[in-house]
Image 1 (cartoon, one colour):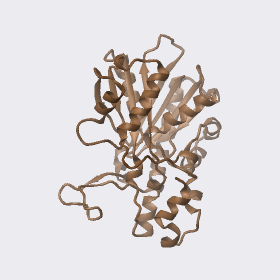
Image 2 (cartoon, rainbow, N blue to C red):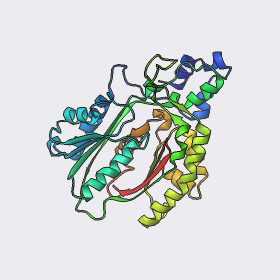
Image 3 (cartoon, rainbow, N blue to C red):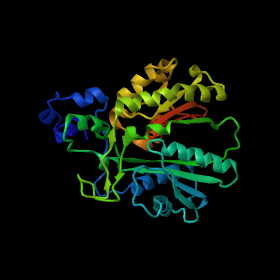
Image 4 (cartoon, rainbow, N blue to C red):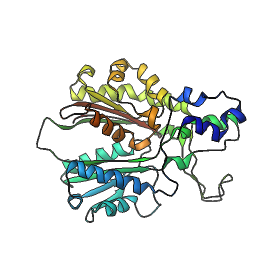
Length: 326
């Protein structure tokens, strides 16, 4: 779906007097991918997980734990991870959901790492499936509401997955990780708000799926934490930024990463190594990192032995920084 099509459907020009092409100009997003309306998050996760298992040459029956880390899920109960485990044939795996907005998959990767190192699992499948397009507010009633809905207009659907297992090669694998948070900023971005006492006045349902975000304040809050997260993870890893082969960053918009990295002392170096997908895929939420990695691997930029930096942020707010050798 092109940004021009989204602009027209919302009526950005006709209803709010903005120029054609305004949304693409301010967001840096040209296209995004949406699943068919009947598609469930688990279906997207299963499709990605099957590809990951095949690429890793791992029998699904050898998976000990399945973590589903998507924001959107098939239902409240049971855990969508059960559907994913069943879909890939991991019939003896422990299955559970783990969520943390756009950082969900990286948190899942961290939990998988910890479980394996603690001896509680040998192989973990971390998978996500996102139907983020269901949270778009197509009928903002004012310019103020439109501005809080812009982030939702950039969202994309898809699936992503990692197969995680121990390696006997000390030169490869996950190196260091840093997670920083400021939970007091949870009000800056909200989606799927619950109305348990009375129906939502707009949709007449018990859950309002629309995503609303104060983008300016969220950006400032996130990049108040990013420098410390990067310094900590790079120092503990013992790498300089010039040693990095490739970097991956969750991109809420094109301007988000571009402007944010420009603020950092080493931002220019990171930007030259960044594998970006946001212009073509939009905000791919929890699957942004695996989606970019798949592309980079196919292009030869993510090769065995590559030194990798992963940076991500999410509503809540929290920031994640990981280093690994592919």
